[in-house]
Amino acid sequence: MMHWAEHLRTGSIVLVTGTLKKPEIPVKSVSIHTVEIHVSRLKLIVKRDEPVPFSVQEAELVALDDAHKEEGRQSQIPNRTRLSNRIIDLRTATSQSIFRIQAGIQNVFRSTLDDQNFVEIHTPKLQGAATESGSSVFNVNYFGRKAFLAQSPQLAKQMAIAGDFERVYEIGA
Image (cartoon, rainbow, N blue to C red; front, side):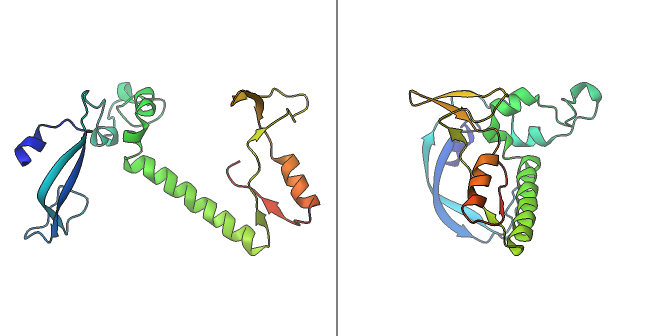
């Protein structure tokens, strides 16, 4: 069974059935060291025919010379390749750290504003008419109808305040 799994391409999806047990010697080559799976069944869910363009480990390698640095990033993988394969890139510690830092900062802002009796609102991102006077608008086909991307939540915030919300805020508009 394990011999069969060794020949699957990286990126294939396998359903593993087994029993979790404590290893006699901690396994240092994985992220969880205190348990291992004693496999009783493997089932191939998705077989990857093409090789993955890069691995998570390759994406985390630091480029030592300037020739391999990409637009200020320290990675050897070009940004275009990373973004075309975003699911793999999101598995890197760097990418996950960025999202965790952003979430932490937003939580600090939310806590601070909530403590001061602000109300978080979520304004529409699509509008049926162009509301921005004098500026370029982004036209979108929305299920066969004309729509526009909202550029500023100012009108929605003003309506909320006029509707007796004294203090409002929006994060990530």
